[in-house]
Image 1 (tube, rainbow, N blue to C red):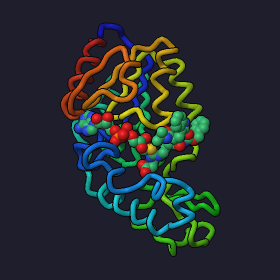
Image 2 (image 1 turned 45 degrees about the vertical axis):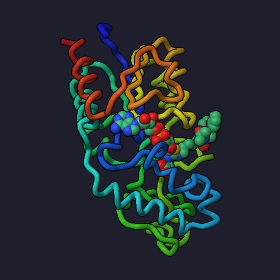
Image 3 (image 1 turned 120 degrees about the horizontal axis):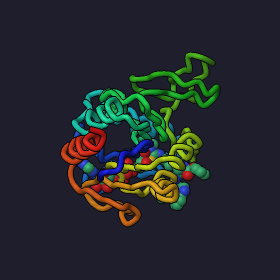
Image 4 (image 1 turned 90 degrees about the vertical axis):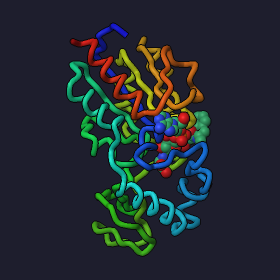
Length: 237
Ligand code: BV8
């Protein structure tokens, strides 16, 4: 890697936060082993049994409150701070570890667990406590409509226009800690390739879209991401 890239887009997934104690979704010990997507992460599930959905997200929110950014989060914040290129980080993660690590130019395309959304008046507020069916909205006063401000399956991800804009002009696309199994995120590498970008996957194992990448680095995020960032910053020296 010798090219001096000017517009870098980084996509991250659950694998980035795994070593901070926030288990991934798939694979051994993954969330989807104990919970069914259709029972906890869809609008229909919330309409049918909101308490079960609140239990699922209250559990994750309490785990998230204990978690700390790891060496991979810190390395990505360093890249953003020291790299002469434009760096945009797009995360599928709903935890707050990128921000805690220092990353600023960040899009939570699947929302944030540290926010609550009122389904009645669409007000979104910072929220670190448990949520319940009885919880009333501070803006409209309604109860029963407060939900985690996350994107459920079948719902539109956030800031897609800004993301596709960045993908269409990026010259380096880096995917970190994601299995490439959820769309539209899993389609971003194809968009970046179509724009002529160099594409790199950093992951513990080959993702579902591994063949779409020009370069792949396998390993644990806390080891391979700091090394990759050092190498990348070295190209501007
Ligand atoms: C939508 C928030 C309409 C909530 C999430 C096209 C084809 C097929 C299906 C679809 C399609 N288009 C749409 C769909 C339907 C659906 C979908 O993709 N279904 C899948 C299951 C097939 N998509 C949607 O519904 C999306 N909405 O399409 O709206 C629309 C229309 C037009 C244009 C746009 C949109 C909304 C999807 C978002 C759902 N919400 N999260 C919550 O978190 O509870 S998705 C959630 O699951 C995460 O955010 C993430 O996106 C996904 C989990 O994936 P990963 O993060 O990759 O985690 P995973 O465990 O799978 O993998 C971890 C990886 O890390 C592994 O590879 C592992 O090897 C690696 N790893 C582990 N440890 C480490 C590591 N790597 C390095 N170091 C380590 N230590």
